[in-house]
Figure 1 (spheres, rainbow, N blue to C red):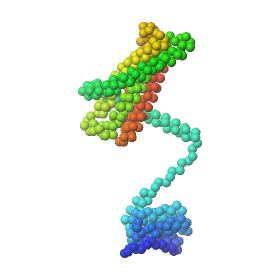
Figure 2: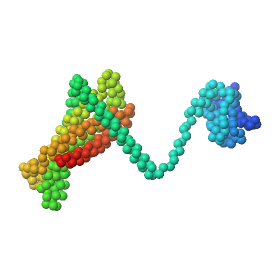
Figure 3: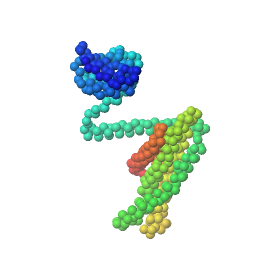
Length: 388
């Protein structure tokens, strides 16, 4: 039999424990005041006892001698019992008061979880697993995007059947903010890119004595691909991110929940006006961007190729037909739908933190530009296949 005790406090029993192993069963008998102010002196003895492998297969914790027990004391008892269990000893408790049982149960539940031991995996398995997770996430995202597209189309259908649901003022507002306010940036960048394409094309074609075909290069590349692609990327970075930030801020401030409480559909109020605004304005921006790109190419042709405006226009008419100009405009509404849907859906996915707004805004820009490029490639292959 062994015994350990703590310091004595006035008017109270000291914290102590007795270990009796004479009857073939290890009996642990704590006694006295096991509160945070009294247990420190016996803590080291308890640690040493818990590290000693007992000779009996069973241990009984008899709590009948406890005068006082708080969370700290219960934690010491639970720690000792856990150490004995780890050595294969079967532990049971006797003579527990209801309050003692509740304390021990709570302390036992609050133990830190055991560290998960992961089996080592090969580099091949890690790479393949990561690729699989990315593919699965893309599949989930694609399904969610199609579902959101269906909800928007259903809302537009309801607005057609019930014109009073349609919000004209928000539509005009977003046409100005997302479309026409972007005109200066679109005009400047398309003018510069048109000039750069013309300058580089003239330098390279001059080596073969074919610098006169620079006009053909500008017309085909800019009208079919670069004009719409550059304009869509500008709109995705400028207006798509604005859609996400605006709707995300409303979601964070619970304004969207307030709309639903008032019986207003956020799809009618927030999403549909933005989608239709881009569908209307992106083709117009593309048209203006194409003209500015051709003007930029014409400036370079006049300065480097000594080509007069009349000759430049005449060669443009010979190099580009209706479909050369129309291909870019056909792509514009589809790209507008993609940009607006990605931006609005990212805004609705915002949670209740400002960090989430920034994260979703970044994702919306990246996804919009990625999908715009993919869509442009699909259209290019389609028009090539049908001979346009």
